[in-house]
Length: 77
Image 1 (cartoon, rainbow, N blue to C red):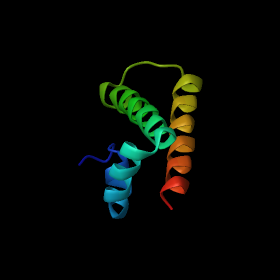
Image 2: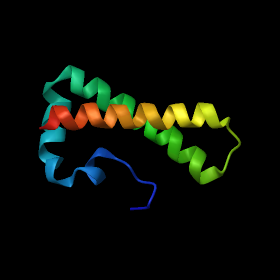
Image 3: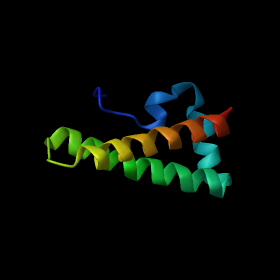
């Protein structure tokens, strides 16, 4: 995995089974996990391609990703 990989399974390997279960059984968790994945994919794509994006827009995307990750982590506990 690369330094840029922020997948839930990478960041929370101890919760691998719980992540999978919640994605199947909890629609709120599943929705947030899907949103997180899409946002993470976009952020990583911009980071890897070195595309020009406004600093405010990029910062907002990264902050939203962080907030989602925090919400998901609380749901995992």
